[in-house]
Length: 278
Image 1 (cartoon, rainbow, N blue to C red):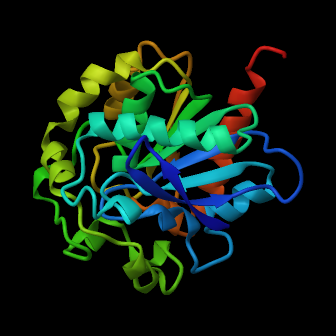
Image 2 (tube, rainbow, N blue to C red):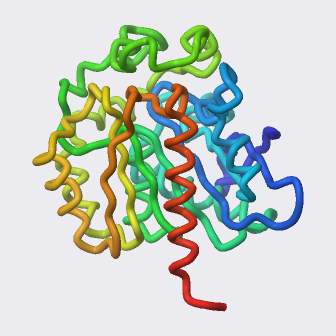
Image 3 (tube, rainbow, N blue to C red):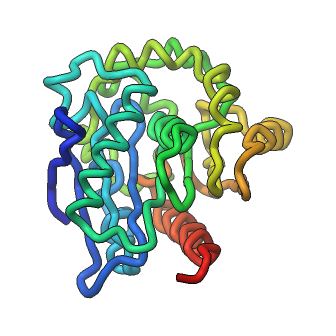
């Protein structure tokens, strides 16, 4: 795993990159973090089984975990962050820069958590070429008032992670280095997500997999909610909605990280297998 920067036509975005030890990648997973976290969310250090970057590279994939605009290297340039539409533009530019310099295999697969899930949905709706999408911790019907969520590191957000036993010992302490304030422009959009989602979901035209943790506390996820969520993706050729047992909101930092990541990569394999023969 190494740290790299990507030119998003002016702004520079920081990222973590892991690549297969031998040969070209089967495909490239673009992992996009949620609000108040950084790219290191996908490289959890409290247990060997937690890191998506390590697992993906072992299984033959490149994994690129990006710091979204307003986080990491770009925080100084965008202290207030950017709205989703502008983040989508910069994400595409950064990925154009990446694919010009690195082999991507069969293509890009977008994996987003929480607010990062919103960004990959918006990017796909904007036409960013992708094999498919894997979204966790992001629904369309809030279970709590999103506009009232704390925006500072710590700030009471930990109560939304689910029971402490779902995470390896030391996770919360280790995550102090991964947290960041939620930029103000990003926070301002939280309350409008339901209407925003209804507008962009029909424009997503690639396979979509959505995962909800058993102990998800930010989003409603009973059977009726999930059926309505899936029905919104009228342009997607395939939509899966799944539950991850024994997991809280931040699945990729918990004991359930490995089974969740394996299922996400299996979905990616399905997307690659569905491509026309070359």
